[in-house]
Image (cartoon, rainbow, N blue to C red; front, side, top):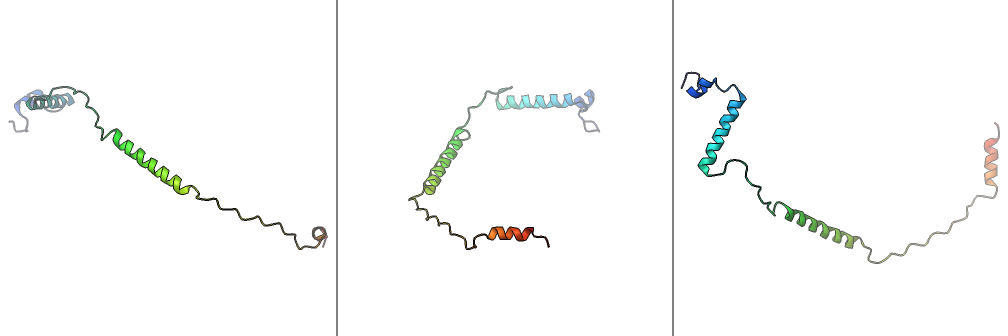
Amino acid sequence: MKKDGLDERTARNGGWTRVEDYILALARRRTARHQREGRPIGRMGPETPQPTLGAIPFLVMMAAFAVLFVGIAILAWPVHEQPHPPKAEREAGTAPPGWLENAEQEMNRPK
């Protein structure tokens, strides 16, 4: 080990100044780790989706909304129709005949 903290291989190549050196070292470590653990190197095949993470929660939520919909529809349906109150007949006004003409004349009269 040298005094600057780099081993001989790294010091000989110029240190960790290039991104390619860092990425290549990470790839070598990954390959070595995979070989030790017995895992295949490279991409793995796609995993089958878990039903608990896929369709089952969606179906449970749909069923819950359906139950809510039916419950609300049953509660909102009127049990029996209430009869409408009879409409009040129009009452004749109490103003004397010709009051509108008198009011118009008063408004148009100059002061």
